[in-house]
Amino acid sequence: MNHYDLCLKEVFENKERFADLFSHAYFKGRQIVDPTKLVSYDKESHHDLGFRRERDLVMLYDQKFFLHLEFQMTKDPYMPVRILNYKYAGLHEQTKASTRFHRLYPILSLTLYMGQTKWNTHKRLYECLDAFVLEQTEIPDYEMVLFDIHSSLICFMDIYLQKFFRLIQYVYQENWDQLVQDEYLQEIEEDILQKTNVFIELDEQFIEQHRLGGKINMCKAIENLKNKCRADGFDNGIHKEKESIALKMLQEGFALDTICHLTELPIATLRRLQAH
Image (cartoon, rainbow, N blue to C red):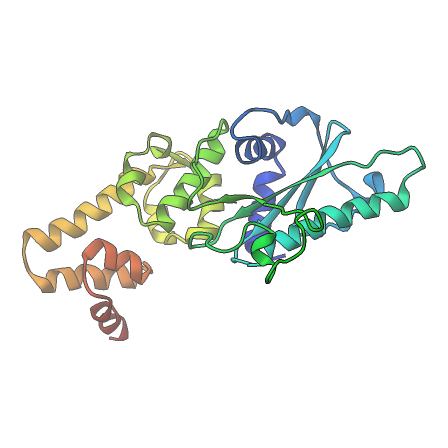
């Protein structure tokens, strides 16, 4: 299992967060999924449905249907086909262990996309098919349910998820102003920062400088960082001062795109400084 899947699995094995994500993305914010009715899936109790237990997360809800959470970091144009395969393979596997009068559990799948750029590929089955000429009743269309960290509204009941998703979204999109102004991000618990850091990779020294009482004042830290860079650079009006700040940031491990954004130096200048 890669570190992204492991991180997301640790976050969403919490049933309150799992229920909140499905209610938000699958049921348009209606709090339909009751976390107290969720039971973690295991092959011995619920039969082998063909899910990759080490990567995906599956729970049985109220002995009525399965909720399947698929973690995705890359844009796969055949993702709708893959999700359909999981659904129908799961139903087929149930028939092998069923009795004559047993009813099959439906499988509701949600794809959680956490890549660095917006999902801009297929969501529907028909988009994957070439020159579709048969009647639609022969192969019914299917649209997968997708939560995209870039385009989906970050509005959860669970405060942990609010902070977790919003911080990643802002940093991915380099939306520093919104990050500073967001009331949910005035303080960041260390556990949340550790989980988000799997995706956004903030500098460890930077984090250490702003650690206080188990929480990170992320907004204040980034605001100070931006103000320092701008004050030292623009107020003096000296290009060498900007380069000096950039060099210090390079030595402290900041990413090139972050330094470029904050100092407004061209990337070629930063690479020259990095080489020396």
